[in-house]
Image (cartoon, rainbow, N blue to C red; front, side, top):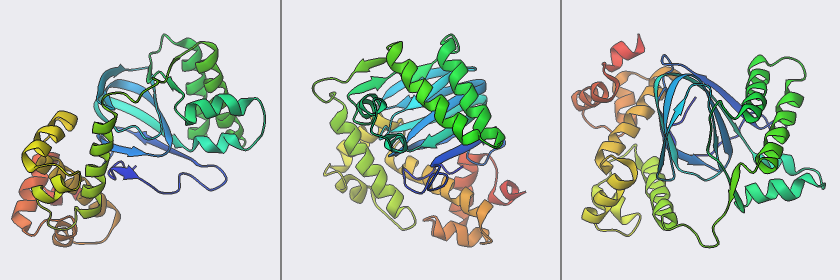
Length: 281
C-alpha cells in the first residue's frame, strides 16, 4: 500500500476492474495513512482498534466495526491506534457504463450534488452488512467475486439514497474550499519536489503566500509545520524505496532529498523510532 503520494495517480486494480484493495495491520510499512488525495472514491472498514480520521479539516474517531466513505478529491489522512483496517479505492465512473435509471443517482454523488456521510458506525446495520460483504468478496478473490463487489457497491449507493445517509451539497462552496484547494497545490509541489532541496520560500510561493503566513496556514491545516511535513513525507518515500528496491541506504537517503547521511538517519529514527538498517530487518 502506498499512501505516500499527496495526489495519488495510477491505475487502480485492472483496466476492466478498477478496484484496489489493501489489508493493513500494525506491521504494515505504511501503517499510518499520510495526508493525501485522489480522484477516486475510497471505502475503509475498521476491523480492530480505532482510527483517527481527518477529512477536509473535519476530525472523526472511528471505532471498530465502522466503515468510512471518502469522496473523490477529499484531502484525508488517518492515524490508526492498535488498528487493523482495510481499504478499497475505486473509480466510481465505472458504474456509469449503462444508460439506465441508476445513472442519475450515481451522477449526483460523482458531481458532489449530494454529500454522503463520511462515517458509518456498526449500528448502521444495513450499510455494515453490505460493506462487509463487499470487502469479504474482494479479499477472497473467489470466482465471481467481481460480481459481488459491483452488486454490493450498487446496493450501498441505493442505501445512501433510500435511507437518506447524505446531505445536499451547499449552494455555495464551503468557506474552507479555497483553503483546501491551496493545500492541495502545496502538497502537489512537495510531492513533485521532495527529492531535491526546496526552501520554505519556494513552498510558500507555490500558493502565492508569504513564508510567515504559509507556515501558519499549513500548520492549521495539517497540524505540522511545512518543514516537519516535508521531512515526514521524505521518510515515507524512503521507507517505500528501502522495501521495494535494491538501493543502498545512502542512495535512498540522497534520492529522498537528504544530502547528509547522518541527518537522514537521525530524521528516520525521529519518525520511525528505529534506524534504516534495523527497519530493513
